[in-house]
Image 1 (cartoon, rainbow, N blue to C red):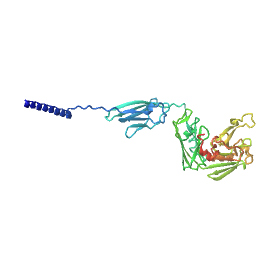
Image 2: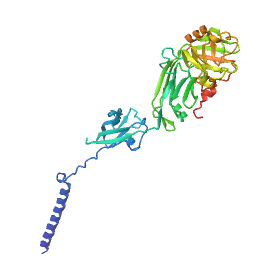
Image 3: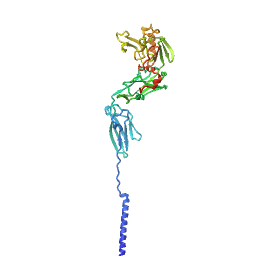
Image 4: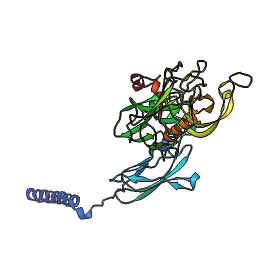
Length: 397
């Protein structure tokens, strides 16, 4: 009986061991187990500018990808026959950035393609819009480069950006105005009014100076809903130095070429009732003849000082009617007394010599005229502002 129980017990242990061994082998048999392959998610493409509402046209359009790489990006303007915007991929193709600026009040279609690590493709489309300014303004250069292409400019010529709308944000705009001179000559900007930013050095330009000016202002908020319409730039060359000095005491105009006196001539300045402005004047225009009409500054028919007549050989030195010109009617007074309405009167032959030698940007310095200083806003009254004041600027005024 005892022996039979032992046999039964041994059989049970053997069976149990067999089950244990069987379980162990089954769980460790890699050939019999089943693995499920999990697919990677598709690449995620984003365009931040598409979520920001209308953007400034100078803000670059950037396409980003996560979980993959970009393979193709196109940005087009449907309103301009799907004109493409150029751009570049980052070296790792995780982003693409536009390198062309956009236009105002425009809508751009962005189509981006990408693949994930398993090369599974995905394509997404976005829309990017740009702001629509209430108004735009241009930054014109003065003088126009084509006007002085042959002659160059004189040593007294300020660099000028003239905006077609008043500028409120002058300090910000000024940061985007640049002047490069060769050889270097330090200078500063000064706003003669709300539309005109002028740049000059402490002294006149050196003859032969090359000047490059830039207004990198496209997309810039000028204030009051006005944005800059485009960038602008120009190049100028300074010609020989021509400076004429008109002394109201001696009634003589003395002319200097590159610092050396080359001529002197009798002249007549403005009468006591119409004195010429004192200070440095800069020639802004020259015409063989013009009609001078005193009514343009309020002296009209019926006034004893009214005049309307053709005047020859005219060099404009201010915007309120001051010229160096031929005045055959006052030859008897030239060198003796001041009888003009503010102009520098010369005999015809002397006026011809001045007209032949002086050009835009050349200088006429008037002293002892009895008149007030030429206002800074009167075309090129720049030199009436002392250099420390000019250098300090007034963009925040």
